[in-house]
Length: 76
Image (cartoon, rainbow, N blue to C red; front, side, top):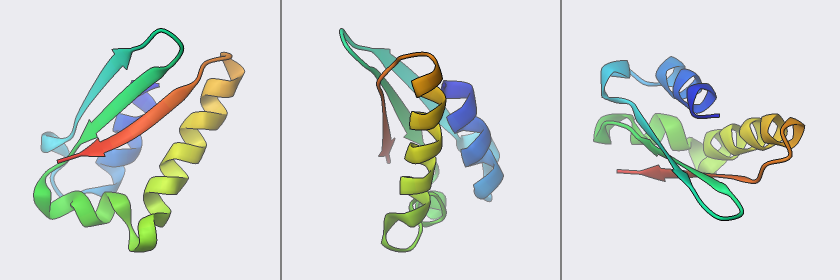
């Protein structure tokens, strides 16, 4: 799942070298932390959070195939 988030984020931002993805395995879910450059934060979140919501929807759909619960957090 982390590779999917990383691929999507790197496609969106101006500085793909500064994109980092960290996966934290919880007891019932997987938390994916996405970190981008401060200048690229708006590109990843989008207007009214539309792009961030779309990323979460795609990851959630991919996780459903594997019967996992995934949470995507965008941090600075």
